[in-house]
Image 1 (cartoon, rainbow, N blue to C red):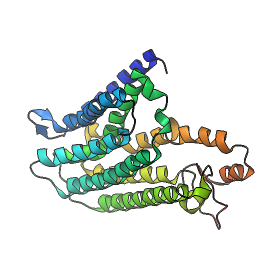
Image 2 (cartoon, rainbow, N blue to C red):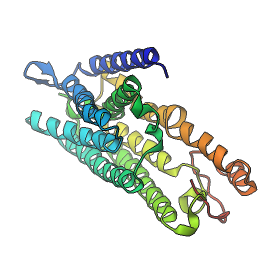
Image 3 (cartoon, one colour):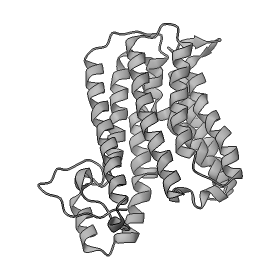
Image 4 (cartoon, one colour):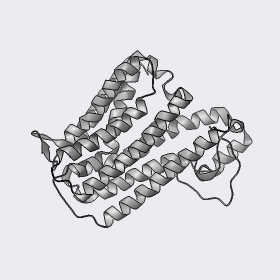
Length: 296
């Protein structure tokens, strides 16, 4: 990506973030005269830009995912501080986001420290504007993925917990467990010397080529369902949250980046071709038996 394209992409990211921040602000409680929703929307961006400076100077990507997780936690804790009368829905959503953020953030940080690098950043970290765009998207990612939950956290409207909360928590638990188990299975697989340069198709990975992403998308749908009863008017725009997660993980990052890499590495392997033909990229499909064990 050229410098011009990177700068334009940064501006587009900011416009998108500002648009959703404005849409979600009606109905938000105020903090020092400003909508709390809009204030929280900016926190993730500023934290990412702050950490970007030393990261570019030292040419490191080690703190990218950790910064994202810290941003989620910081935003939730700030809303807990700013809202004088937290209701049960806000507490529930906030706690679920914090649990997810701490688990995933620590996992990704320890992984990049253990492996020494993240291949996604090999080229981009050497280019100022492209690297800045990536960190800006990190701030946008934090805000939009939690936008529906954040709208509920900052909403002046209070509705008792009911069936929406029950369904949402069930979905969140399902997604969280799938993501945790998938990450554990893949890490354990890659830790074995005999599995180096092999692809995994055992456990959850025998049902989906990317079960961890399926889990993440599912849990954010759960958060959105919990938040839904208190959303009204333009706040409904924040329902884009899980859709954004799906699009980003399947069309822009995640699967869109990993699949071509896997094809290049194992595309000539008949076992991998069979695995790819019989295993969905995202939504798990149960099988009677596994088909082997290899991984990226």
